[in-house]
Length: 237
Image (cartoon, rainbow, N blue to C red; front, side, top):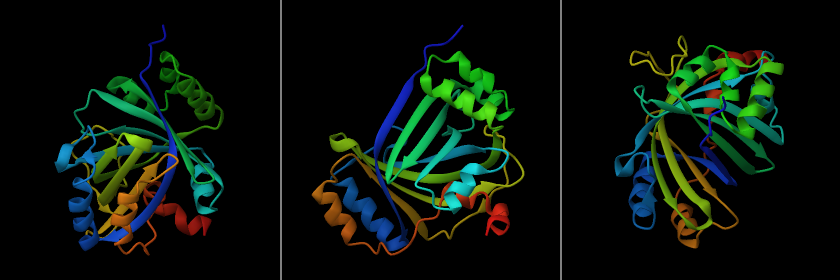
């Protein structure tokens, strides 16, 4: 019997930058004056852990490397290894706009997804879950990488505004156990660098524009998904 799924769907524009530690500290102070922290971690932030999936021919990775106009990501995400729920997410980007659809799944179903049992998606009354099931079964998707990072996030209800700062990006090369407390991580970026992401719909507040304009935005933010799959870089170069 299908379970009524809790569906989260967000469509908005997204820009990314790589910023320095001084700019990070400046933004944390400045943004906290005009925005509020999101519901997951408050002012202290939180950890994000995700396992990504890709097809047998690595089509999502190749689309990223070839800078395709349309790209997608499929992942399962938690915020702590003891979480009893997880987010199964389908993220699609098309010409600078992002659509992210999430289905809240049980811990047990998340574990079955990691075992490539995608039939659990059919337990949820969700077009997103059914689409993902068809995609992942016909194109032979499998889990490919596990990443983790530390996040500070700010939001504003107007224009679907969200600003995140992610640092300490790391991956686990030898395990895809989303719920493990014992993982050996490899660092994927310097400790003094931060990925700044700004997401909004239609219009970005002038106050945010002015604050961010005082930062050095010349750095190109790395792809979290791409960075975790560095073993493929030489092959597809």
